Image (cartoon, rainbow, N blue to C red; front, top):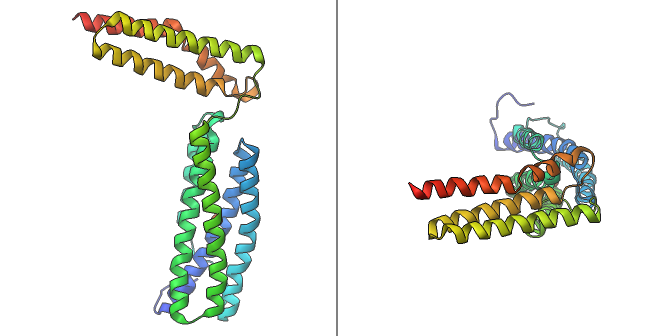
Length: 255
Ligand SMILES: [Fe+2]
């Protein structure tokens, strides 16, 4: 590894070494994220990109060979930080919602990788290193495609529901959750009517929206094993809690 960078060529090689470290870090991150992912299609996407990343590592090593240089192992703290952030966020995220965190970490990593290859490419072109340019363009293309797939999946689950599907719930459990949601909405509507004033009505609607959100998240988590806590939280947020909130609102309204 270089102690000091004194020429454009040294900067290029140093950054090429950082790209190699980046790909190795990404490969490890993809393996960890794949284990944590809930959706089979997300696991598949991460596995496919892990395989692509193994090939990208070889491509970067070929770049060093074409330049007649030893493979450099420059540091890449950015990818380590992205992996650490994803891991820390996953630890505090409900199991039913981890896929959204995984996709965020993956997309942030893909965009960083694209920026790295774009910078390497413009310098490789300036050096007239056509074979190296061709190899780096291959890697950039892989990152762009992977980034587009990750973004598409992130958008799809953001629209259709971030929490995992409800296959794990029995028919009875689904009916119970649906009834709970209906009761909560009904209670909130009654509260809005009782309170009368626009301000209070707004608060009741907000309470209904929050209740629906919590129920939806809890209701879409499997009812067994590690995901039971979400169901437990749904039971805690029952009509009593809503009535307490309504009473507080009325009390404030009277003073
Ligand atoms: Fe990548």
